[in-house]
Image (cartoon, rainbow, N blue to C red):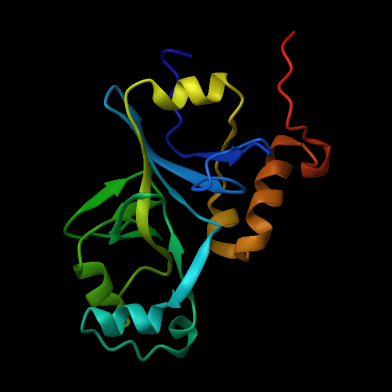
Length: 186
């Protein structure tokens, strides 16, 4: 697993996940390399909608389809900072291209464009992100804290939050009810 790369993968928290930041979560990995890994939790909406968020940063959001969409808890790191997971990638001030379809942007220009009806077709906004130091994610996977599966962006952008974990499990061919909190080793 030393050369494993989990970019564009889902991490599905195992039932025994003790860390309350990640229990029951589905995390999308946006970057993974020698410096560690970075991802955003994509199934934990918070008590803040896009209309309120845009108002807080001084932008008027008049798109009725977006106003009530939730903001998500992206992870325990930099929870005061916004991260926009989106497709298509587009051309924004500070974007990490996850692949040729999905980007993660931290610059305000993407929100300004959204307020002008010029933003990406699909997006999920989080406060905070999930981060792992060098080798930390690999160790957690070895300890059965996470299941991994190549991501399908439809799970993020087309399904309600509560359906995302079961959908990611189906990508693995696993019924979530069949998972045990106990680790097994052959």
